[in-house]
Amino acid sequence: MANYLVIGGTSGISAALVDLLVKEQHEVFLISRSATSATLPPQVKAFGADILTDPFPEDFLPDVLDGLVYSPGSITLKSFKSLRVEDFLDDYEVNVAGAVKTLQNSLPALKKSENASVVFFSTVAVGVGMPYHSLVSSSKGALEGLVRALAAEFAPTIRVNAVAPSLTDTPLAQKILSTDEKKAQLSEKHPLKRIGTPDDVAHAVKFLLGAESCWITGQVLSVDGGLSTLRI
Image (tube, rainbow, N blue to C red; front, side, top):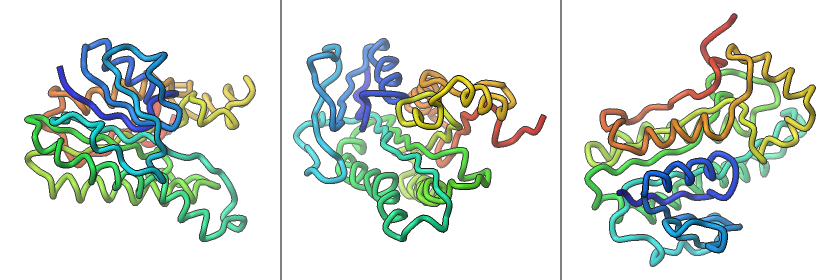
């Protein structure tokens, strides 16, 4: 049994991850703006907070932390000419600064683990140029650089990796997947002819957290239906 901290775990991919971790009898510490213990199993300890603006609840964490998952993100698709510098700074705040704040506050507990693992979220759009993705591509690209730098700095005691999903059927993507026609069109863009599910990505995150991936660090794992590498 391990102790895992999940940031933003009440919907989508991170909610699916929490379910997987609970099924394996791990202890999950969840921080989210909408977190409440009322609807969660007893292995999940929830704390309601906005990680970007509220003080980090250091007393909430266990003495030893085996893994950290930072899942907050954004999907803002706009033409570059319509964006302001402030939009890029806001996106960076969510995707990078929040991850940095969380990791800095969790580091003492992670250092006490024998198999500590940190997992961040990138996107397929970092490696594949896509129109209207300049916001998310730039902030997640910075996050991928952070993953490699920290993996080198923390080796061999703490592993740091990321997953890079393509479009996944989550509340965050509701506007993009608002009709069956849109879902069908976007499914066709992927070699595996469907969009991702929360479980598709959650299983990859669970793998990177666990001992099965103990020789993997500094990597960005593509979970994207083949979109980043295949043309068929």
